[in-house]
Image (tube, rainbow, N blue to C red):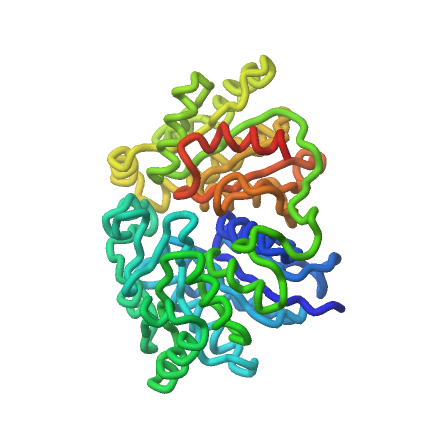
Length: 440
């Protein structure tokens, strides 16, 4: 069996496609699976395999167990390096899950070459996620001043990643600051060695540009475990002699991001309440396109909102009014009001379950081009559609590609699916997504 260069464990489904997108752009033949595949081997050849989990917000002990299962399967595939993909806004709580999963993976890889030390670097400058002096910035503001401070499940109120990660692990957390990164890969490796000699197992690494990611990528050659957002993947391909995003060309096949032609009706399902997605919903409405709002309080009273939503969508899709939008996206104050009545966990579960059932119903109505906004929503939709594997296609915006998938629901339909992290994409993302697919 050909050796897999990189085995990846992603803590949510949008993050998985984000990472797979950057790997494909870098020239690695990439396959994304939903969950750990059944059977000992993947039926297709790939340079990189991304196993998508829905583990970002579950209890840390469950996240660890699922990640270790994914690791064991990836090592069966002969993966030479392991990549634990986390969110570019480092979504977590003081209890985890980034620290506990990283610790567990390091322990499990203790027998591998290059083990015992890893990085934590969620930087993705193309998406305005940068790290300086260990502090994460979203655009021009600190993470703690961004919309992420209102996240309903993982509110990020501290931009100091060293401090955030230190609260999640008993092991010392270090920093590789930008002065070191700017000097290149040799200086970064020297800093790694110095930190490891002091007992540090994880180091936050500054990065403010793609050039920094290239330096970091070269420094990671041979490291058993990489913990990072998708940006670091841009610099890894050079370690296997492949071209990179920065060079403007791809190694491997020039058809690496080609998908079958798109057919069928168009729809958007949105559960994210991030500022970026709020702007995208507003842009959709401003264009005069149809939108249906899913009310969590109505769901809680037992109202069949799913049936209402599909009854609303059917005539509009039939009249060619798509793309239609079905959304639970709301302003922070409205989200807090719902959570005060239902509790954050119950409100989230009600919305995710409803939107997943709506997505299945839309496919039944003939939707074959579907955009899903929000990590938790994407996970619920993918699972409800019975998707097991995804082919990665062209990029819509940094971190968000179109994919082609085959469902086990509704008679086994093939459809085009875009899973968008709540924080990603320009205001016109929904409209741009379908234009991009039509021109692919």
